[in-house]
Image: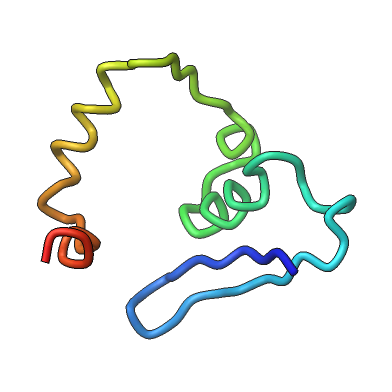
Length: 78
C-alpha cells in the first residue's frame, strides 16, 4: 500500500497511507500542501511548478551546496 511520509524533526514526523490512489492529488501536490502548511505560504505558492530542463546547471550547483548537510553520504561512502 503506498504512503507519504515527512520528517519534521529527528524524533518524529507524519505518515499518511494512500487508501485510494484515485482520490490522491496528482504529482507532488500533497507534499507541496504539507510543506506549504509548515512554511505558512499560500496555495498560489504551493501549486507553482518549477521550470527544470535536462542538464540544468542549477542542479549541480545545488548538489554541491547541499553536500555538507547530506547525512546519507555516511550510508553510501562509509
